[in-house]
Image 1 (cartoon, one colour):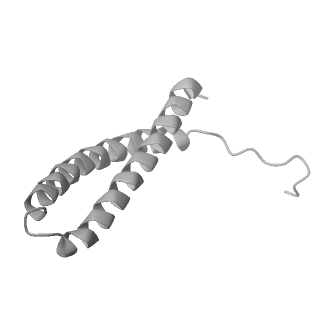
Image 2 (cartoon, one colour):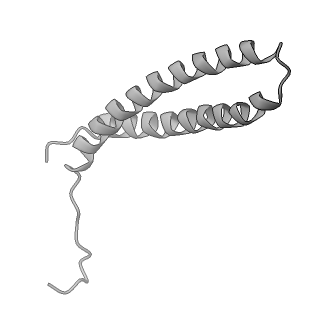
Length: 89
């Protein structure tokens, strides 16, 4: 068995952390995007600029998430799937 368990657990923690961060940013982006049409013309440009920056940050996090997910999957497929000793063969 050629599995670095510490690395796998580290990637698993990173993966879960990135899922939470990406979901939070998406929720903020969706919420503010719905609010923008109801804002005053003075407020809109600054909020649109904020959302553009947030979108860029989100894209970076999604790229990082994909890389971590790919590395995690590579190790995940090396984890053995042991049969229950009572299972009929």
